Length: 404
Figure 1: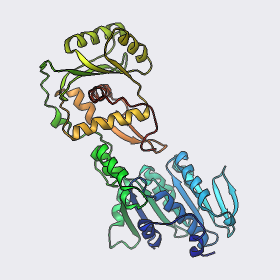
Figure 2: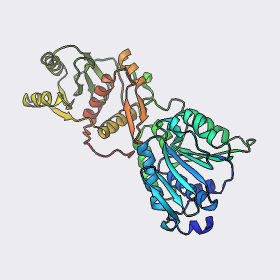
Figure 3: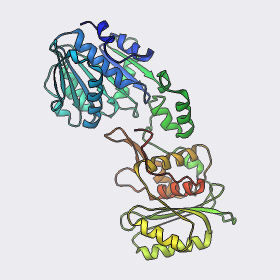
């Protein structure tokens, strides 16, 4: 069976960007792609094509984690015609073709597990999230005896080893490497209005990385223009206010943030190591002073009975349940407020440090997570984000993330 015959039998119609990748003959190919470009589909189709056109070929498709590897497994199941399959084993995660070629689906959780076998082709999906040791110490040596080829596809993640591979592919004097950068909009099957909606609702840095496939030097950073926004004077002019309250007790801090209707921070109170009874008294004192129109108060765990108590007292309290998806929306709204100069904060060193350290990471599942680096606090950030939600009155509920 030829590659031409194969294209007629699998449910895959490559668009221009995917076609350029398939037609290129460089030994090492690197694709930096925006989300939903179709990189995983292209990689699976390339694995099948390689297995078909050369009997006895060994192909590995490698992903950062088991969960992400299984996405590739399911996509291969959809694409490979049953007539080509001689044997399929989910436990070992391989497809054996009638011509004795094999496609293995691997995860790079443990780089040492990738050692040992000679390969004709390795395709690394979400390569930016795979440890460099997996490529240099395990996969690259496995290509040596057969002079095998490598494919690296990913959404960028800063300027790590994957970025270096991309740069090498841009060198016209390098005969072995080729690289491309494809934005989400380069996929003609994506509705343009969806991309524009993301452009309008996402912080600039996130849109640049996730949709424009740009390699950012500070890819993990979330908030821009923090220092420029630290101009609030904390003067109470009697305007209506909004509160954000993030509870803490021992290791974490309780933080109360007060914003005016104009988006100016009036005050932020941060404290811990005191009983919830005294925390409530401190909150009531702030309420008495600043007279909030709306209060968004964390309702997770111990926060729920505290919210109920405040509501019984007649305070304008909305409980905010922080889930993975609601936190994403809340943090992205806050980041957008900084970028659009809608918010000014007090020049408080603790607050500025937390905002500048706050980072975005990719979970093993491929989802986005926002949090402080390990060992640091983010209580001031969350309290400010809650206050901004109270000001804008946008209480997001739990649901699936836009990055699912």
